[in-house]
Image 1: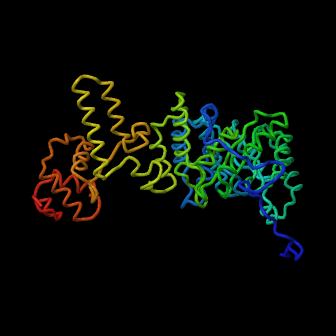
Image 2 (image 1 turned 45 degrees about the vertical axis):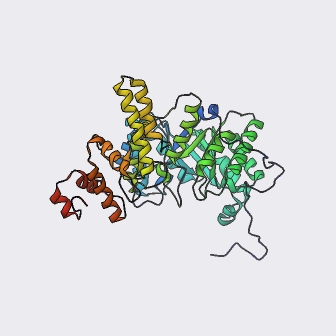
Image 3 (image 1 turned 90 degrees about the vertical axis):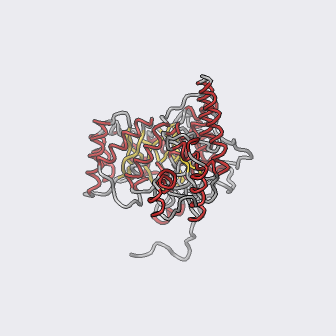
Length: 460
C-alpha cells in the first residue's frame, strides 16, 4: 500500500484540555471541588458493562449470563445500558447481541439499550435490525475526532463532519434516538469540537457524549471541556440537551473526572463494575455510585440506587468476566476487614457500648452504636452495600482481634479463655501472616489433637 505520508507532512499535535491555551475556551482559574447535590440529583448512570467492559476479557459471556446481570442492574436502579457495537458483517457476535436485545425487551423492559454505530452503511443496517428487535433502542453514532486519529485514518475534519451529518440524519430518520459521539474528545481542539457539536445538534442528535478515550484528561481539563460543550449547546438554543461523560482509568482520574463532569454540566456518566475494560479500564460503577450517594445523603436527599445490592452486583459481574475480587481498592475483599489490634480494640469497645444500650432497653441508641462499630474504621458501612464486617488474626493483632473475630463468627467474645487468646496470637506471630478462617476456627475451638496436627501445641 502506498504511504500517504510525505516529507512535508507534519504529525499533528493533539489538544491538551488540561493546559493548552485557546481563545475559544480560557483555562478556568477556579473549578468547584465537587458537584452540588442538585447536580447529582439529576445525574444518571449508564452501564457500559456489557460493551466496553467486555473488551480485553478472556471470553464473551453467554446471553443467559448477561440477562442475569441486567436484572441485577435494573434492581440496582440503572435504566440505561450499552450492550453492543457493530461487530462486522456475518460476525457471530451480531446474532448474540440481537438475542440479548430480544431477551432484554421481554425480560428486562426497564433498561433502555443502546449500541454503538459507526458511520458506515453496514453499521447503519445492523443498527436498524437491532431497532426492529428492541423498539426502545438508542444508537451512539460516532467517529474519531483527535488530529492524530484523523491522520491515522486519513480523515480530514470536513470528512468527519460530513459522515456524522449523514449517518446521524439517517439513523434519526429510522426512528432511532441518537447520541452524537466522538472518540478522543479530550484530545480534540476546541474549534474542531465546536464544529462537531454543531453538526451533531443540526443533524438531530438528542444528546452528545464526550469521551476521554485514553484516560488522559485531569479533573480541571474534564471540567473545562464539559463546560465548553454546555456553553456551546446553550449558544445553539438547546441549553437543556443532555451530555454524557465516558471516562477511562489510564492515569487514575476516572472518578474525579466523573465528579467534575457533573459539576460542569454533564448529566450522565458511563460506568463499568469493577472498572473493567480496555487497557486500565473504565470509570468504576461502585466508585461513582458511592460518591454520588454520599453527596446526596449529606444533603438529606434520596439516593436513586439500591446500594444494598451493590456487592451482589459486583460479584455477578466478576463471575461474568472471570475477574477475581481485588483484595484492596473500593469494595475490595478487605474493604471492611481488619487484623489490626488497635482497630479491633475500638470496634470491640463500640460493640460493648451497644450491648450496654441494649441491656437498658434503648434500642435506638443501640442501633447508632452498632453503626458506629461498623464505621469507626471503615468509611463504608458494610450493611449499606449488602456486606458484613470481617476480622482476622495476624502478626499485628492483639487480644481484641481474637475476641472481635469471635464476635463476628456469631459467638460471645467473653467466653473465649485468656489461654486460647494467647495461643492464637502466638500461632499468628509464628506463621508471620493472617490466619485463615479455617485455621482460626481450629486454633480457637478445635480439639487438641487437631491443633497439634496443624502444628499448634496446646498451651503454646
